[in-house]
Length: 196
Image (cartoon, rainbow, N blue to C red; front, side, top):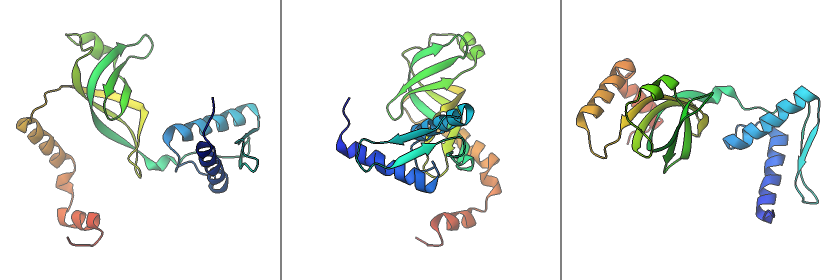
């Protein structure tokens, strides 16, 4: 497989940035996880890994038992999500899950209690649903760590405005946090002191 010179130059720049900053927070989630896994293998086994490109003057990223390339845990927060799509697979022998095919995120694997799947009365496969799930979300970028998704609720999907459902969500939000917030102060903080 050949990589374009543009891809190689981009990866070379990433290697330099990681080496200089010793941080992984700016990387896409899967890239950061890959480097963390190599770092853990290095610590566990005592190996030293050198990652570089095919460029003659390539930057080099060295991972060994003394290096510490990890993401900041504080920037990943617990969050709730609503995903819409078709359930294309459900079940699992050891860990039950559903596979939800979405337009926005591709196919998501959502850990689901076996009890829910056992008790669900009809076959959900190849039907469109909303799925309420919880997981981790990057507080700065909004990126979702799809490997942390856990099932909360299956919602029958109807592409229509449901006033009662939206009212119940607003009521739930008001009771849980809106009632505790000074709305004028909060709005001022969101605007950064600028009145629009």
